[in-house]
Length: 157
Image 1: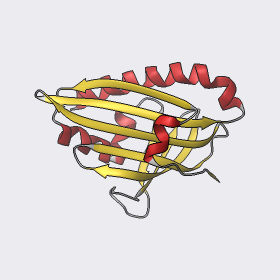
Image 2: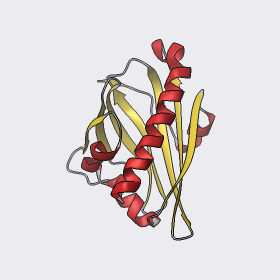
Image 3: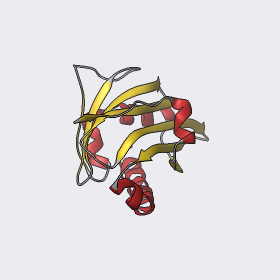
């Protein structure tokens, strides 16, 4: 894997490529957050994800690192830059096998909404090479993947 330039939370909404989506879960924020914190569980509900694990014996938390593999997109080492149980989960990618980006971060926000949870997701990236050319198609693909992930996770919750 090659090193990527880490990002801070404030950078994500200002990235050259930004994607956002909002969905609702019938489960409370703490339960949704617990599903996000369960690294090994992600491949069961997140499309294209074949592997997810905490590194160095971690189980999450601010500064913790997780490694994920996405079919066709590569491996990614993520460092958590926000960890607020029941409220917020954000990371920056610090290493990757993907040649399509130089900076990348995601921000997950959970808000109590009636008896469930409003989930606001934001991805920010600086694409490079093929990533620049494929950016419009990748935005469509990511929206579809996230919609499917939300439906899959809702069933599990």
